Every structure is written in structure tokens, then in C-alpha cells.
Image (cartoon, protein in one colour):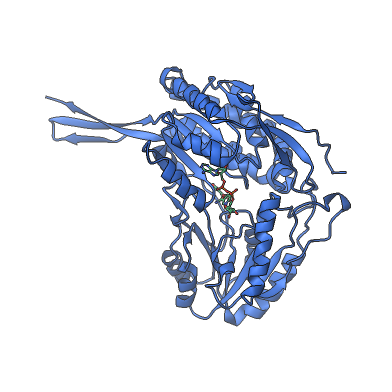
Length: 490
Ligand SMILES: NC(=O)C1=CN([C@@H]2O[C@H](COP(=O)(O)OP(=O)(O)OC[C@H]3O[C@@H](n4cnc5c(N)ncnc54)[C@H](O)[C@@H]3O)[C@@H](O)[C@H]2O)C=CC1
Ligand SMILES: O=C(O)/C=C/C=C(\O)C(=O)O
């Protein structure tokens, strides 16, 4: 028995304002990762379906009222979507907990309001934008307009499906584009609601479309489709590379937010009262399935023993359980495949001679969760930052503590990675904080905090963590074509 009544849901594509099944009526099943119960039967698109949805989005862009309606009307409709999301907050948070296995309390308090904010923020922000003007003496005047690009493919991952889809949909719509959304096949439930929410908000048919299926079929077909002009993708680095290859023939524009292996650097003067709980969150939020996770904890050797002792106690105190239970702080991993991947790193850690500080087993759970994909919050210690567990994105409740002696050494270790999405530094020394923030090669550095988000700032990664930036005007520029108009004044 689960803590919520589960009725198997039927998830359909949303095309041109209607929910419909695939042309060949094929489906696939989605399971609750906490129990392995089937929770949904989802339509599985064919290439023909992708062709159809892309054409619908193209026609809506070329001939529909969306890109030509007044900015105020467009933004009002996007803001209405945000209001509806808040009205349905509990329902969406329940679905996210059911589908992803993330704690309901986190979805309700954090991700769903953030999803509403993603839409409202970009509607408000778009209305504040001006253009550029460049007079050439008195002879000519150049002025710049930002126009929508066309059809955007929004390909999103399973770790924060609703929040990350709205993060792309907000600027996409505000800039006047139409969208083909491809949610992750493992977690389609919450994103599927965006169709009816868009319709209820008065967004014209064909502007927001959602198509379900496997990434290698549906994602590839979207990426290769002539009607799709740009792709905004969040997910693994490997998939980012495939998308770039597959989009080359149609010369698509890309924004990629990819993997991470952030260094969370704790100096001896850090305020551990703050650093420990935030580092626990950075390690185990959403079972560590967060691209921004602080999965490499670099600790100055002079405080190593006391840090390990406190961190271990805090990790062991985390309540692991049913995602629907408000007391739960950590749920299961998203799927059997991912569970097996994360578990395989326990063997790697052993082979590499890492020292287990805590975890590595299956937590004690209520009987109805016995088949869930649970792993205890797991903490290793390793002297060698080049070990695989310190280099590869594990994307689970699995962190490694690595010692360092000097600031230079901390920087060397922090930067010795293929990734560069974010970094974290804990110190009470302002000058050192700046030196480290400047020295770490990553898109966001948090000083004495983690995952604090202001939607105006650039968000994205250095190195293999991404291409381009989203957030504020960066998102609007990605989803727009800049046009210059030059007028002779004489
Ligand atoms: N940066 C992040 O937020 C995320 C990172 N990951 C990392 O990726 C690893 C593997 O997870 P996956 O589920 O395989 O992520 P993925 O990157 O394959 O999936 C993300 C999205 O891409 C789609 N996709 C897959 N192959 C595609 C293709 N060839 N063309 C177009 N779209 C495609 C999927 O259907 C899904 O919607 C994880 O273990 C984790 O390390 C996974 C999800 C999110
Ligand atoms: O806050 C954001 O805009 C993005 C957050 C990204 C993740 O949570 C993720 O991909 O894990």
C-alpha cells in the first residue's frame, strides 16, 4: 500500500490544443520509483508524430496570432499560466513526488512556486526590455529589434521536470516563439499538464505542444526536424553531444545546460554551523540528482576530522522515506537503470580504495517501499581527486570528501575536472572568497551559500557543462533574432 491512492494515468501528446494518442497507438509504462507500481501509460510518439507536431508549431508561428499579438497581451497570458500553476500547486507537487520520487514538501515549497515564477518573471522581464539605437552623425540612425526565432524544441530532463521545462518555456513564449516540448520519458506526468494550463490561460492552439517518447527516437527526430529552429536542452553531456551532431544539418542554434561535478570548498575559517547543513543539502537534495550538486567536498586538512564527524552525523540524520510523506527529506532514485548506475559506483569506490564514512546500503524503510530504488546518503573520503568517483557525474546521494592544504591546491583540485557548472566556497575571509570565486572555472560560484537563484543572472556552464547561458536577457537573446534597421536621415 502506498501513502497516496494511485490510479494509473493515461498520458497523451498535446498537439494543436488537443490531447491525442500516437499515430500507431503505441504506449510505454512509467513506474513510481518508490514502489515500482505502474503509475502511467504514456503515448509513445513515432517520427511521423514528431513531423506533425513540428509542422503544427511552424504553422502557429508563421500564421498564428502569437508572435504578432501585442506584447502586453502575450505576457498577460503567460502570467495567467503562472497563476494557474499556483492554483494547482498541490496537485502538481504530488505528481512530481509520484513520478520523480522527490519529496513532496520540496516540490510544494520550492520547485512548483519556482516554476510559476519562471513564467511570471520572463513575462515581466520581457515587458521591460528596450532596444538599442546608434546614430551615425546626422546621416543615419540604426535601431535594433528583437524578433522571435520560430519553433523551439525544449528537451528537458527527469530530475526537475516541471521546473526545468517552465524555465525554458517562459522566455521562449515571452519572446514570441512557439514550442515543441519533449519531457523526459521517465517523468512525463507534470509536464503533460502544461498543455491544458496553456489552453486555460488563453494561449492560442499550436503555440505550446508536448510530445512524449524515448529520447533516441523522439528527441532525435525533433533535433533533425527542418521546422524546428532552436533547441534548448538540459541533461547529460553525452546527450548534448548527440543533439549537436544531429542538429548540424539543419544548422540549429543551441543552449545546453549539461552535467556537473561541483567542488564545495570548505576552508578552516568557514562557519561550519552554516556550511554543514547547506553542504548536506547540496549533496543530498533530490537524492543528489541535481546538476548543481556539491558532490566533491574539498576540506582543508586542519578541520578535516571535525568536519567529517559533523557531516557524517548530519547525513545519518536525514529522513529517507516515502516521497509523499511531509517528513521525508530524501526519496528514491528515479529508475532502476539509474539506481544500478549509482550503485555501480559503490564498487568503483571500493576498487579505488576510498574510505566509506557512512551509507552505501539500503535504508530502513516502511514495508510498502521495499521495492523502491533507495540508497542511503553515502559519504566517502578519498585522498586522490583523480579517482573516478571524484571525476564522473554520479548523480546520486553519493559524495566524496577530498582533503587539501593550501588555497592553490584547493583551486587545482576544483579545476581538475571536465565540468564547470558551478562551485561553492566557504570562508569568512572576503579576499580569499573573491580569489577562489575568480579562480574556479565555472558558470556560477556561490560564496557561503548554495543554489540561491536570481533569474536575472546568467546561468550555464564552462567546459563540458554547457554551451551558452540562460537567465534574464541571456534567455531572451537566445530565443530571439536581433535585427538592425538602418535609416537614412537625409
Ligand atoms: N544536468 C542535468 O540536469 C542532468 C544530468 N543528467 C546526467 O545524465 C545521466 C543520464 O541520464 P539520462 O536520463 O540518460 O539523461 P539524458 O540527457 O539522456 O535525458 C535528458 C533528455 O534528453 C532526451 N534525450 C535522450 N537522448 C536524446 C537524443 N539523442 N536526442 C535528443 N534528446 C534526447 C531524453 O529523452 C530526456 O528528455 C545521469 O546519470 C546524469 O549523470 C541527467 C538528467 C539531468
Ligand atoms: O535553477 C535553475 O534554473 C536550474 C537548476 C537546475 C537543476 O536543478 C538541475 O538540472 O539539476
